[in-house]
Length: 164
Image 1 (cartoon, rainbow, N blue to C red):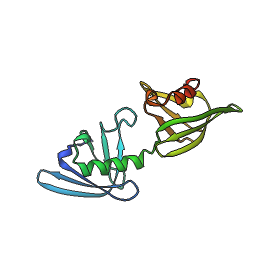
Image 2 (cartoon, rainbow, N blue to C red):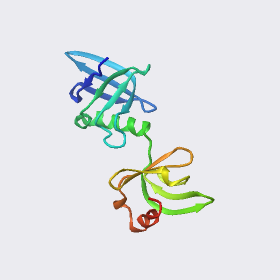
Image 3 (cartoon, rainbow, N blue to C red):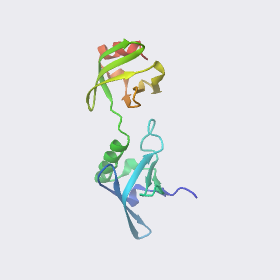
Image 4 (spheres, rainbow, N blue to C red):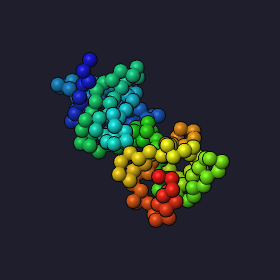
């Protein structure tokens, strides 16, 4: 079955609870309302809005939105809220301390979600995903993002130097 492409001109999104959306589609003069829609993205690390997939409560794909950047403001906010819920990845905004203990590195950082302390098992858990951009996976499998190392303060960059 071919994936159906949905245009931002056909879509209205309304926020529901727990990261779900109500999707209203206007197709060929017909209005279809689908509650409890889940969102997934095709390229979560490189281009989050390039291909946004909408799935119903049974996990069946309704369609893929390829021009999410053109959504009307309230729909764009609802989509952004749903994606933030689904793809919760705190962004590291400062590094207070990185200390190795018994082969494990303990990180004390500031994030856009508040201060965090976590442990990283090895350098393989720190992956470059673009120029100056890194994903850090802690021992428990949680992910943290360094969006642009160049935007961090000089002390934070120096603390990261040995880890990256």
